[in-house]
Image (cartoon, rainbow, N blue to C red; front, top):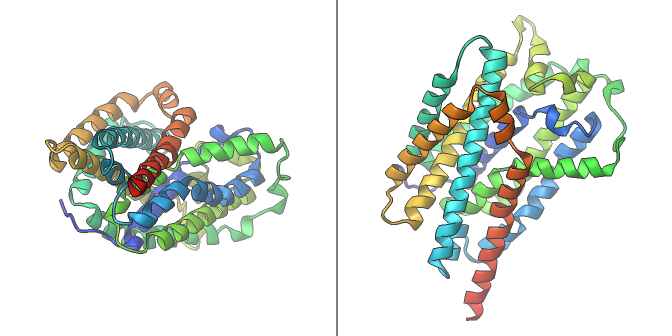
Length: 356
């Protein structure tokens, strides 16, 4: 494992790829109470929810910039730090399973509809374990290169669809009221495992985290709003009938001799899934090895990879198990716990130590 710290740009490039994957895998069935124009506004307002949820982490790192949330808690209560580390690991495992199950749903229904991809996905999960073994700095370097490819691909696909936008496809804002919109906005925030990653792994990042985080929040929200804008403007109500609208949008796009640009988007999607899963593996293994001295990083990583592979084998291939697993309620609780409650607890302990 490489133990070198990564730059702020590398770290937030990683997080941008994971957020991009979340946008790619948006399923309209989860937001059926709001209309298309509301989705565009929701993507833009994601920056507001991100900033609000990250405020406790911001105040924490003003005093302890080079430490993670669990390390700050450990200075006051090692037992509480162990409990927090276990919670973070459980959340990272859960989001790993939901990420791979969505990938299985995509591969099994769109790419390889007549092929069982379970064993292929298990191999992919184990490959992500190897990526985590290389270290977060190696993942960060790869993410910078991948960011260029992903951004260029998305911009290219959207640029080819500019002439296909129909303003009549857009609906009035809050047509069904503000309450469904706010409820969906909270659900959207609950898919942001990046907020938990920032709290758990910020100690791995060099200086410039605050500026880098702000840029990441703004660019992520802009990307979401832009993609939702094109989905609404080009496909209209057809968007709500699609399992993965952005893939359908890419299938419509064409440029000169190039047809069905969804093949390019599929490659970007798979690579983003690799970086996200490898990052979650790394964060979980590091937390266990850091707060449980008898557990080495490699042993924790091997165990986490094996459990994830076994869990994926059980979940994948069944739409019923996917629906049960991919719960908005569980995700909301998980993210508010890791991004808000635990950092607030760390902030209180930090203050108590200061005035003790």
